[in-house]
Image 1 (cartoon, rainbow, N blue to C red):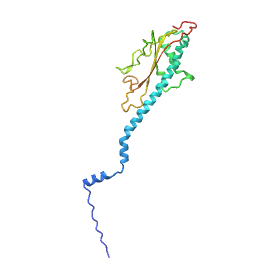
Image 2 (spheres, rainbow, N blue to C red):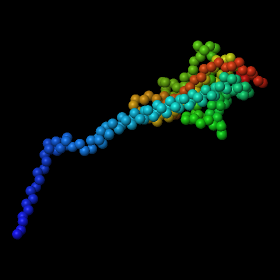
Image 3 (tube, helix red, strand yellow):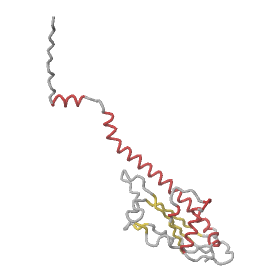
Image 4 (cartoon, rainbow, N blue to C red):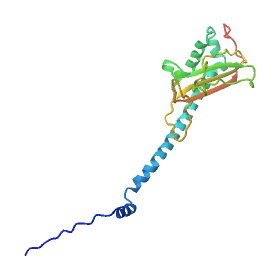
Length: 210
């Protein structure tokens, strides 16, 4: 006895049925939801990392400068460089005090060799003003910053300003950490530290440093 099997073609679903099934299908919903929140989440993580890293670098930079200017505060730096008169030479020596050299290099999270230092004096504390490292109009270094050195005599009010470019790793979530918008290092942020103090009445040994 022979059986006959009749194959009935299945009706193609209409577009309305497809849309209904698509609305009811929950498969892959988690992946879609993650894709929607992934970019804002990663942007937030990047912003937190950038801010935390820059705060840490700022503290490290400030500590390095404070340790360096202590030698000016006590007069040790002036007496050790009494034979020097050129501003560039004195600033280079102060940077060496701040960064160290050779085996005595001080570990930092910033490029210490790129630091610019400006040293000035004032007659009164009220009249003391720090130098401006960056020209906000041009987005580059202020002309002349990092080339001024005023020798601090005993009992003199001194203003030491140091600044260095710092890389911006993340600039998401509306962060405005970029201080340099043109020239070398464009896109970098700025680390700056200022120390204002009156030198001790240190004793001058040998040649007058000032």
